[in-house]
Image (cartoon, rainbow over all chains, first blue to last red; front, side, top):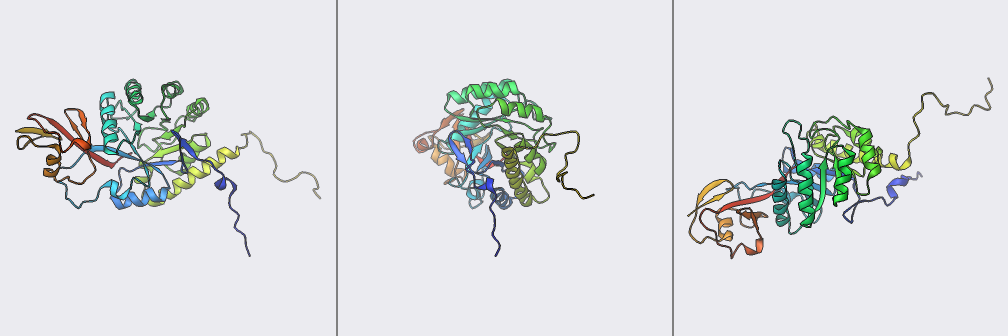
Length: 270
Length: 66
């Protein structure tokens, strides 16, 4: 009879802690760009993600009464919804969006703040981001903030009271992977709040690298939704996040220029 | 009277309540949030709040996003 040995780390209690709430999954996913709601549901479920971003937009007036809605397939009791401020280019628009989201979701106050600076890069406008974060925190929101990979700004956002800081790996939707691993590492080392890479991941190895750098989690959308097979990529990402986390906790060997034999040098008979 | 709903002008009856507007838009029973002239209108006030001519109404919901 064979015995299945459970990997050690998966039995560890190693939750992601955001604003005092524990999450088992360190993968956060967006819900945009999918073919339809069924594919969204399947990919989200397969990813194992518990925190799911949504966008706030005008309703389609004259919508068909029976037409399913995103919140019908992603029930509020099962997922923590993270409304985003995507598409906002000013602090004012971002704050308005968060207030509407809070009303929409019955007082839910966890939000993803992103204030964009430029359509070509979708890089954050840091001046507007800081202003919006300040207003939102004063207004009682728990702010997870999208920012660039600048350690000084990341620290500033943490000191203001953001509950998580989310530096980009590369431009949103670019799939370029982590362009500045040294800055991400510095941001992680300086932080007392969770650091999540948000945006720029292209494939599973990118997510694993983020976790190996010590990030607390990764938020992604396009890498899954834009894959040839989104549901399979969701599964790959789930494993990459877990593998990267375990590798980080395990502590990798140092890099060396030259070889180090794996087999003993004593006892050779030749 | 005329109001502006999600950026489009709309002719509605005088003294229309927010709840009646939601019904007229075919959005009854849906999860949504409403802003009147950039102020949030809490759901609990939909039945009592009466719209005025020229009001700018935004009706939003959650959709897929990253």
